[in-house]
Amino acid sequence: MATRAPELPPKQERLGDDSEYDDDEEDEEEGEEGWDDWDSDGDDDAAGGGGLLCLFCSTRFDSESSLFSHCASEHRFDFYKLVKEMGMDFYGCIKLINFIRSKVAENKCWSCGQEFSSNSELCRHLHASEIPQLEGKVPWGDDVYLKPFMEDDSLLHSLSVFDDDEEEGYVMPTERGQCSTGNGSLAETHGNHLNSVIDDGSDVIGRFEKAFTVESTAAECSESLAQEPSDKQLKIARASAAASGIKSVDDNYFGSYSSFAIHREMLGDKVRTEAYRDALLDNPSLMNGATVLDVGCGTGILSLFAAKAGASKVIAVDGSAKMVSVATEVAKNNGFLYGENMEMEQKRDTQVISVVHTKAEELNHKIQVPSSGFDVLVSEWMGYCLLYESMLSSVLYARDHFLKPGGAILPDTATIFGAGFGKGGTSLPFWENVYGFDMSCIGKEVTGNSARFPVVDIVESQDIVTETAVLHSFDLATMKPDEMDFTASFELRLSESGTPQSGVTRCYGIVLWFDTAFTKRFCKEKPVNLTTSPFSTPTHWSQTIFTFREPIVMAKEAPLVGSSASVGTDQCPAVIIRSRVSIVRASEHRSIDVSMETTGIGSDGQTRSWPVQIFNL
Image (cartoon, rainbow, N blue to C red):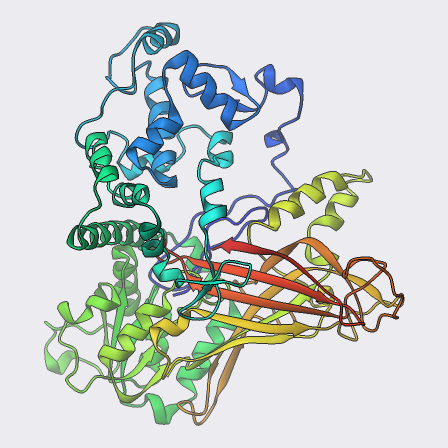
């Protein structure tokens, strides 16, 4: 079901849910541990105590550019040239770096494979060699090279080879079907952004064709730069890239749910699990004798509830082979597993669960779907910020293809909320007093990083300083898949509880959460609401935090001072924060992009807008 995301700096995020996937182990929280990882500035880098380590020798550098300049001059390895010629994307660069480090560790030449007795001999060989014209499949194409070869490799974290292009070329999603470039002009929609870029310059065509296909050669790349491919070629390239990328992400996605830690966390989330339990067990008119499809069953807890509630048949679907075997054993041990080979006289009415290893989209290739469709579709699909992991698309596919007309989908509504948070919603208070020492300089850097990366964490209710706004509501029974992408405009004013005695406070960003509901439409006897609000019992989803580049000073009412100061400062507090947030499915399968536009409005109507912020989950 829903997962926790991969780690979101500077705090950790998680994956999680009782569904087809599972999560990476959680890292230790920043600030509490990991002091040995802190890199000091200055001479320590030169001495080898920090900085970016050369790919081939033991020299360290303060910046990526100086490192790769050294590699080009001393080791005949021109990273930027190779990236351009091969049309590599960000992940291709990561693979290349890890591949080279693995070969250098064995004193082998990354390009020709020749082995040497020492690193110095290897470096002499590299200095005298040239970058070869690579033919056929590049040796770093395997996804195994996405895993860092060197622990805490600072180069991987600081890699910025695409930063300029991304900042200039990124089109911010706004309305569904349109995008804004930040200055108000309209461009192509997020989903068609790649096409508009291709049309703008033939050099990008080569990059597009080669960005995800590791079998491309340098010669082919040069040829594609000079010659625009046909529509058919572009369609084939797109399809190949998309299929390859989706398969890789799905393999990692479903595989990550094969560990039990995340399932323990999800099952232990009483708010989540009891909401589903109550909706299934306390609505007999819906569940008695029903045929049920459980999408992303994980351990099978929802299927067990459905069987206990009196369902006549339950099909539990999961993409993780390990979790399918686990759910099968769990159902068997609890007397709910359906056995085709069991004699009819031996079967009991409770033996109704069948567990199927497949993605929801391919269910009809695995089993005979009931001709009239399932009566009930249940799934715990929600992720961070509701839509992270985009499992909702699989649920909607199952609804459209396997649920009978008028059948129940549980839950059947979902709503995203937002509010402004104060200083307590950041890590600043921690850094201001670390065992009696002022480390606020670290806190400022951490908060600066948070302005580029979303943070998944618990926000205490007392740290919410504005009123709550509704961003968007979904009707799961009727919505279309493209409605997952949306733009919401809303205004935030200081709440009574968020206004200190001074009348002025600082808003550090916007926090999002969601509710899902099992409404009376289907749950007539007992409707249920599941909330992840900071004003309620915390859940494993926590909340998703989007930090402003700088805090905005707010007041409930600000006097007209006639000051020339900027809105949102102590001299001219904002009385309203007007925001526009867009959430769209990212080009990377199962990820989402979030853009945030922020405008402060003073008491005299004066406004101040901040640059658009782009976040990726």
